Length: 432
Ligand SMILES: [Mn+2]
Image (cartoon, rainbow, N blue to C red; front, side, top):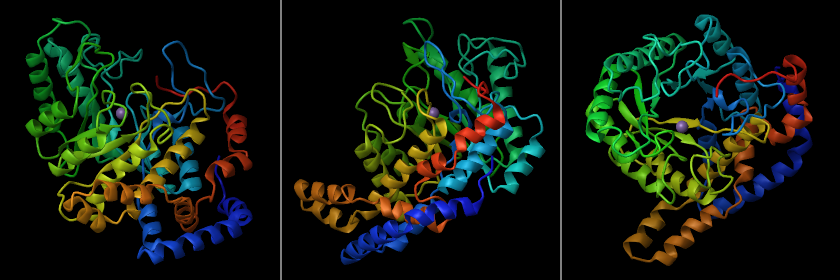
């Protein structure tokens, strides 16, 4: 389904008086602190976050899958949903594909449809963590049961390398500029494999893939401490990820997924370290309580998200950090909520944390840090965090043609109902 711009305008008209009054009041308060609200609004508009194709439908749980009606069952329908999200929020204008879940039948036609709607293709994701029934990621007809790029069998490694190269070629046709490699490689039991040999094989394999990366591309490596390698993952933490990136080459960078850390890891410090090394490639935003729960961004730890954004804003605003531009992506899974509403909430949480981080007076903080005044440092952080920045986020959406309240608009305009009418109650998304 396609939303017309006048549908969004009509929706906004009903909320506009209240919004204008909220925005003007906040802008006036901020100007007393020397902060220009318009400048923050522009920065919020500039930050575009990719929609992951696999999050447009319901994800599976360990015990089953409870599909949401009207899910996109083709790549064209996933693109349609991304266009809908773009029109409502104006904070997402690209889609991140996952191969072979999103194997396009006709890449040129898909690219044309995306071009016509102003949608770009973000990082393309390979998959060597499962044996698919169509064997589209398994040219040598080998199983990934005991790993892929780390495997003791050279033919399995060769197959995984070729799959990644195929993803690069597909991504080139679509205009993508990055390949993301997440490996489930590792061991489930102690002694099952040699840590050093497994790691070396992965580094050597990633080097082979890197040779095929076009000049204007990046190769992103994503770490994760476990699952399904419950005893040891080859790329288990930021340190291993950085080792791989440094061994492979300049355009091989690390990708931080907020759920891929052991509990209580100081993720904002990891972000700072990676930026300092010029090795942060991008993000997978989500939230979690226990592990890689892939919950809605900001639903549990909004203060952590704010602290991460302080590091990101230091990079975006400053000139001391020499790191390439970042790939901003959501990586979430939805079991209960309408996936579209969940992604809208995630985009909203990202914009809010970004706006809060932009409010921090960095000069005052630096002075307080130099004076060893932790109480004042906390006051400054929390003054920014506790400011209700929602009028700034709404203003950014309004100026760029989005809905002042995207979830309310999605519901009021009957979007899910229309998707069900078009696709049926039983439509099930491709993927896990
Ligand atoms: Mn991820």
